[in-house]
Length: 176
Image 1 (spheres, helix red, strand yellow):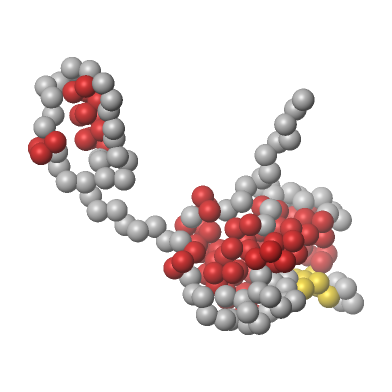
Image 2: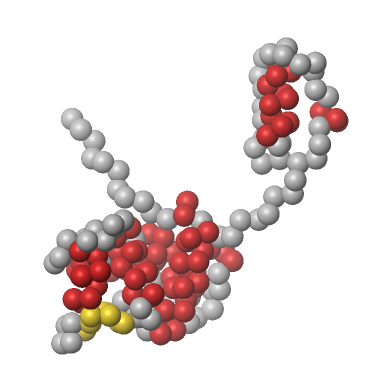
């Protein structure tokens, strides 16, 4: 016997009734007597974000694709900078993440953590040489263009709603 349960349309109760009927635990359920499955709310996705140019080719969709593709540590740093309005000193960022409970980044490793942003920008970002995140070495501060901060807020809202779309830590290397 083969039993197929469609998790997109069948309810939990319908699935249980079908399994019970298949194993003879209850009289066979008649499909026509099953209650209608509730309508599924469409899940938000990157396509729901704007594709309009915010600044130098960056769109809400590109910003989401960027935060979805970067390593979790770089994503956490970007989120922190967005929370701070788009500008923070290098030392403040280091201090925040040095003993962070969820995403500790050792002092002096912030720059290395953020390399995935540059790599992703080359692959995903607009054709120009604009960056999402700038480091001003002269004053040792990170800066995000204000209009991009607003776009990143929208991208992070979607990321919070759909964490399944975000890159996770890299898989452990295969052991010989």
